[in-house]
Image (tube, rainbow, N blue to C red; front, side):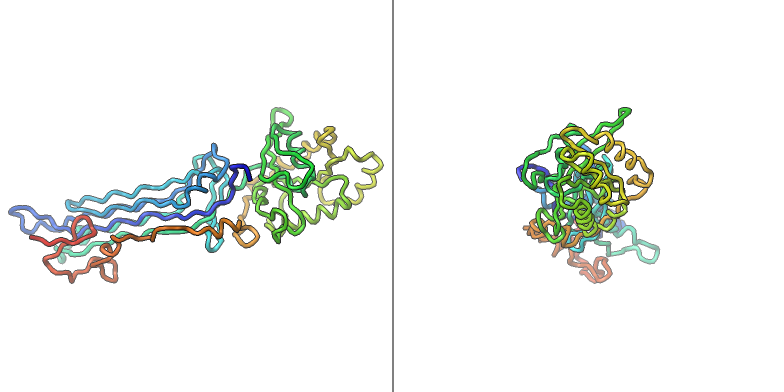
Length: 402
């Protein structure tokens, strides 16, 4: 696509590891037994998601595949605590949903501007040896190491926030309708799949009221099996309160096309079947009253229908009335009926993103070998170290005491 609209991206995140506690003893002239005073290690940095209403795409993350928070520093003598690691804040558009890239499990979502979600928690810093002193153990020669970092590959999906979602086959007139009722100017042409990315438009209604309408690329029969553009764009109508199905008046069987579209939605997410639905027969300027009377008995009886023509304006006002009535119904409010996000599977994944190979550095570094040296199986510094060794304030190396 020649657009910067990105609604699906896979990134690798890693929180910071906690700093090690210090095994240090106070040493000063004429004070031979100053006692333990090793400080605690600093907390590792968090990976945090923050909603930003001024963002409309995940494009920045397309070129920022690795998000690593800072490690906490080790404690030092004098009960000096180590510095906390730097947090990494990821700005995302409102409506972003996060999934585990390996299992496909839903993790969290960001829907409001300024909302912060802690995606990965940084490791807790280890306690210094001064925490473990007691009347019976005045010289504890052990401290805690910091907790390890957490590394996870995640998939971020952007689901547009709109009130009405347009569903239909290619060339059903969805883009034409959106351009007629709003200021949006989607691409319109006489060939299939003109719309290659979702479009939003604000529809004005009576009394200075308005609602948001979302147009997604057309779907065809077999889209759940990968035909056409597949189902990757259907994620943008999962948050919509009302689904507007559009079938052209020149279709061979309007009811059959509606049922095909409904089945594709059911395969994508069965929860979409619970949403309010409206049927619009587009391009109705080609029909006269007699033909409309013949078509009406064949239409589904379980949902309202409107004959419309975006070119002549026929039925547009009636359609707005029907949509507004459905939107303002308390049963259709997203707050009342929150969406249950389906896990990622073969129907919902984007192949080029899933096959992306992270050229990453290992989770640890050369210092980890030194960092792990001297710890026992319980996570404390080994008490069997020679007396002439001391775990220095850096928490990462030994030095001889002179």
